[in-house]
Length: 180
Image 1 (cartoon, one colour):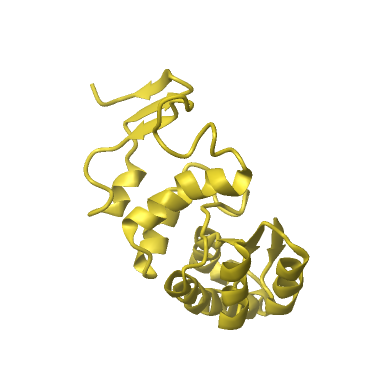
Image 2: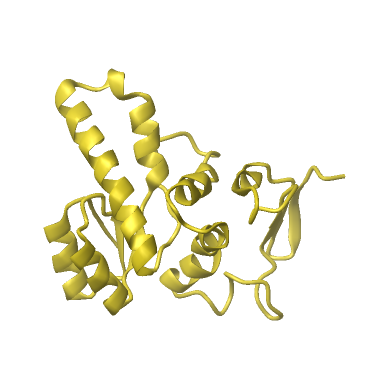
């Protein structure tokens, strides 16, 4: 994984064979096409920039300008990535915003044009592929670890349902059950 916002650094990393680009705010369509061709994942961390933008006045002016530019660019970049069919993973930028809000990334992805089912796949089967662990996780299949979450409603029609997890099973053991 390479963490970068700039196009040139990302392009060089992609050409060198990196598995994923985290952030990628300023990626140009040509670089996104290269990612698609090479099978490089994009992990956009949309929630990180949303959190920063929500507190933009707390930052010095020079950082405000950078954050605004990156957020505007990543919006166009993400839409282009979805249109081009770039592999997209689901990730966070740890410590930028409080833990427990990761599911908000789904809504941001959908609001920027990703179909809800593809947003769900980004956090499941796509991430399993990115991490090289598809034999154990990522889909519900016989022989794989029973890692399951349940939510009220249908996330393919209301992606914010992912923000209301009522049941969690990890490796076949129930670790949360508020659905009763």
